[in-house]
Length: 69
Length: 195
Image (tube, rainbow over all chains, first blue to last red):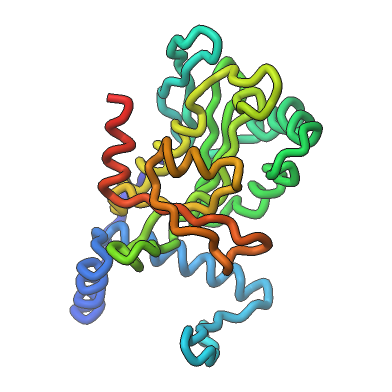
């Protein structure tokens, strides 16, 4: 797959979060940002189809909806 | 879309034959599937006889989480695969790490043992699994892959691919298919098999 390059400007806080997540997931910054884009698109498509994004607690089975704008 | 040179084995002579691995499923692959492949699968009543690659591709196209692969040889599609790139591992030692999840993988019916006059080409499934592992490496996931296997393919994933069998997955619909996962070490061993 052919790749294209861009420069990404992040705040200090955003960069810290990105670096923490990269360390936690064992991913490069590029790989993590690509995952984030895929997830964003997947969630957006489902929301546009009228679905909701819901998290369920595995133990209590309590469900909470994640508001996505 | 890019393609790369890979090799499969002629089922009769055992000779290596060059093939092209595409990192997308193109219209001509689907046309080939519809004309030559689907009628054979339907006629033999296989476990995945209901799979419709045209419909699967229509659902997945445009979604970044999915990537299709097509293996072409002798100007004919020999195998198809769709992977998902946002799923996570289940084996405790790599739990919650990302992997490449194989949603669907199918070799053309003339390349399978279950079909009479089988094995025009050998190694189609192996090449596609290697492609999933390579994508996992390229994505920074160190070769980790996972999949739910149809019973007819359990032995292939367990023995040939060396994946860990985590048993039937009760949460998988509509049937509790067995879930298999490959670790980084297993991926390395698999990729070194042909060397």
